[in-house]
Length: 68
Image (cartoon, rainbow, N blue to C red; front, side):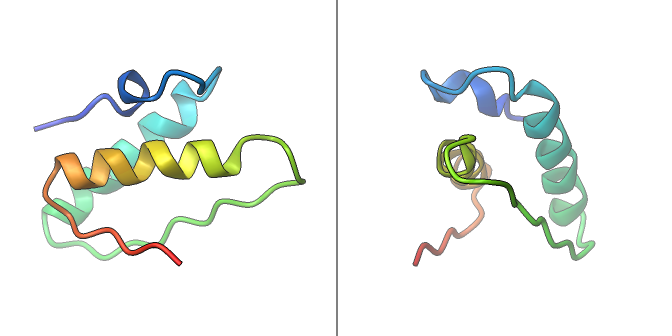
């Protein structure tokens, strides 16, 4: 089952590529393959919004999400 992560976040613009990459990671993790995703960049480019979308997609798939 795939989740379109971008649909859940109203203010996230032009992040379809990144969201699709994370969605594929969720597919692999759901199949039992471990993974790490690194989100980095300068201040103000939308890392927090992207992570909010990723967290929502993870929860929708039944994954636990921790936030610090």
